[in-house]
Image 1: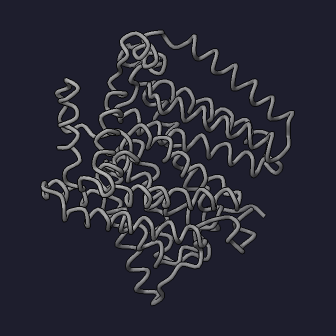
Image 2: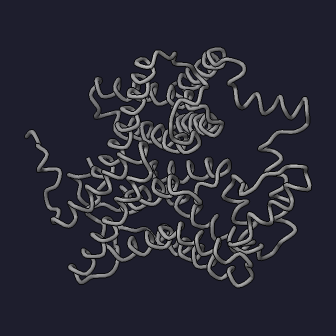
Length: 411
């Protein structure tokens, strides 16, 4: 029997439908504007809160034990920031920083309290498809704008108006989802849908190259290697794994020669290190590591991290101001010390382990993407990172396929 759009929302209450549509809307607008996503986050919090009160029930049976503990770690991470204000001298900056990171406290509280069993695997996939389609549409729009302006499309240029590292965060997640969709459903998938997934993957790879992000290129390569290992080691499908490996290597070779030498950001970094023994990003990391180690075990406090970094930058002859570590792990170690770093690692590692154990590729991909991009950018310090991570975590962590009992929705 052919289904229509109303069947997709069957068995959902009006509040659940509203909440789901807001989640889908955030996933659609985040590649275009983090401001729009942030404006949608407030009504999302309101609707979830009203739903908890209306249902007169607190608790979420859809969460696995590891995911539940990860949310506790996230709340602990946020609250520990407040503790470090006790030894911070720049309290205004510290309080402002905590205000920006407030979603890291709100989201786990809501997810622990609200029953999200209505977000079945099918509805989760709907959100991820909407997110992926939005990225593809934006790529086509950007290409059309270039044509109208009489400019040439080129690999390796700063193609997008959104910061390239955050676009890479979105694109790597979407690429991981496309593989997950193909790996989980290819046996029942029509040939046309398989071709569509392949075309979508190629478009996203082109987009990844166009935004000229080192983390985007590295992230795509890591996702690709995970795919090969999954086919060869986990599924023991050596033939398909070798085909994917060969195709991936061929793609890397083609794109290497397609990208002009001056726009190869990874090779330029290596060349800078080899010729001048220096690179801006390497200098940032070295100063950050020294500052963090010299302030163990509890860090300088959430308010003083930038001031401390400026001291070390000046010692290297750099006049950088308000420049963070560009690494969420170094950020946490410097500002929050070992407790903050351990809480951060726990809140990402526990869901990743859970995703691996349950073969929940979307959850595993989300954690892997955050970790990869977090090594190159302080993605927890800006709303364009938080407004992707928090709603996506909310939608994915609450809908593990192995925790669902509604077989009709999980097909």
